[in-house]
Length: 94
Image (cartoon, rainbow, N blue to C red; front, side):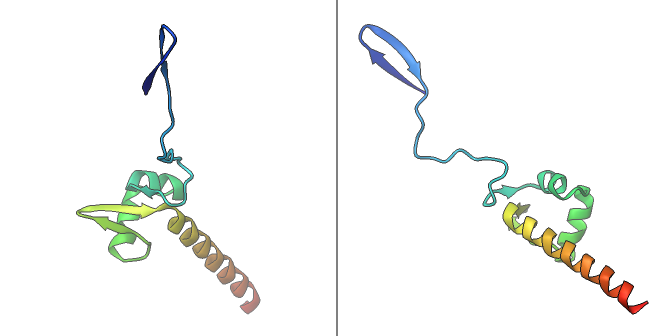
């Protein structure tokens, strides 16, 4: 917040900088395990299992596991498409 003087009054004014305000739906955002688990509707324990088996895209920042939101959404869509294809194939094979 910056203070601007107008005449004899001093008024606090909120001034936006060139930095972008981070939103929760930003596809470029890195998420922690609890946020990623909430997005995918799974438990954090499940995410850690997928990470240990390299079944999900993730990043390690020092010892922290982080997930790129956009990559997670694309990964989930691809998994959903695979599951749908398998179901269609199993009904055709029967």
